[in-house]
Length: 120
Length: 108
Image 1 (cartoon, chains in turn brown, cyan):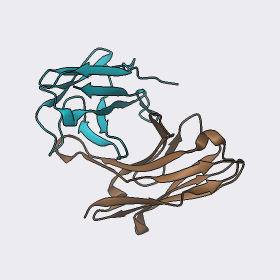
Image 2 (image 1 turned 90 degrees about the vertical axis):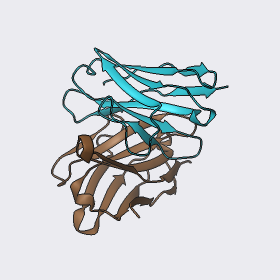
Image 3 (image 1 turned 60 degrees about the vertical axis):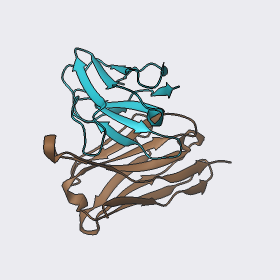
Image 4 (image 1 turned 45 degrees about the horizontal axis):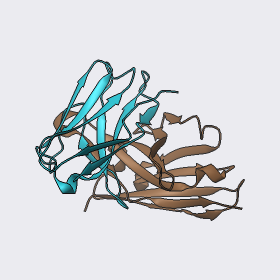
């Protein structure tokens, strides 16, 4: 089965750190650009970060730049998000998303998310 | 930062056509993608590259884009189409992605 599975979420105090992981199965992660997207409780979707298929380029939303670091290990079909200096407003369900190709070859896949709660 | 603007809500009766718009300055040059999200579920892609429908998505879902506005059309909306819908696109650099604020579609 083709799927993405996130893990690493949990409860952390403000200023703390967490490392999220996303593992692909049923396909090779190395063929896809990968995104992290989050959704705060009762709110809309927010794009967080993007990494190119080979990991050479990374990009961040203004709200997390300088605090979050996206990385990947294509040999292990894995994506990561290192989150430092966490704030209460980072509380959200974090999804990983794979995107690749165009037209008939377009590929888009989301995981089910991992919950991050930042609370005193 | 770059923004995409959607109406907060759209309401139609079953069988009617629902249209959800998304406005953004780079949409004349950049593709729009549309996601459906039902309560407690991950988003599902319903339209990509402005007007293409992934396999498994019903034909009643279609997309179009003209100028600074992209539109998701659901022709003959069904009760099961009730969900939040989000447009998704990039800025001119293709390096900053953004979601619209989301539109809650009610079919009743």
